[in-house]
Length: 93
Image 1: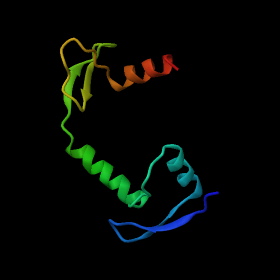
Image 2: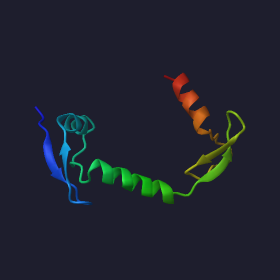
Image 3: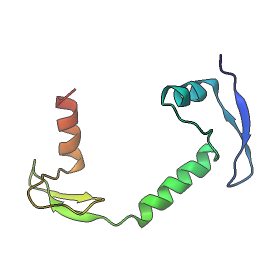
Image 4: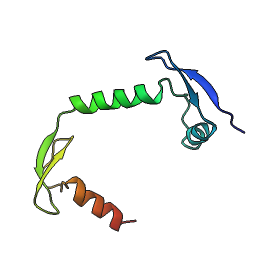
């Protein structure tokens, strides 16, 4: 049904392959647009966004350690460090 497509990255101008598997994934998720950037440019863009993101410190509700989160913690709502969050997620699956 799907075939590999060659696309051109709007960031760097290099050609990249939009694989049949990726197209199938996009269709399952009902994404309407094809990717406009190659994997390297997408990765660089994500890293740039993360580098400028303001992080907040909170006390982990699981272990009592320090947790750094990308949102302003609200009183009365638990915040978990990445390790405790991963454990909770694993236990719920």
